[in-house]
Length: 69
Image 1: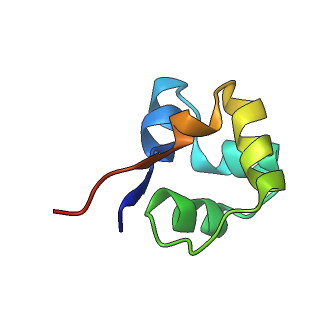
Image 2: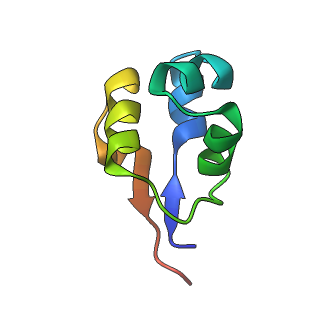
Image 3: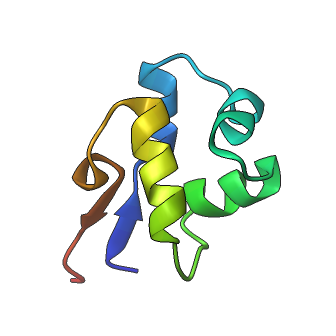
């Protein structure tokens, strides 16, 4: 998929665990794993806003497009 989710990098930079992050943004750790592993089909703007608020970042820091080869 040409959209890459950089949650793993952002969480590692902030030394934040999946459980702590999930609780802070209001979704289950399983759903964080789905996002982190690139298996999500969609992300609600409400969830993206919560991610950016908790990680103190911009949407472009979380999601980026990588052209297919």
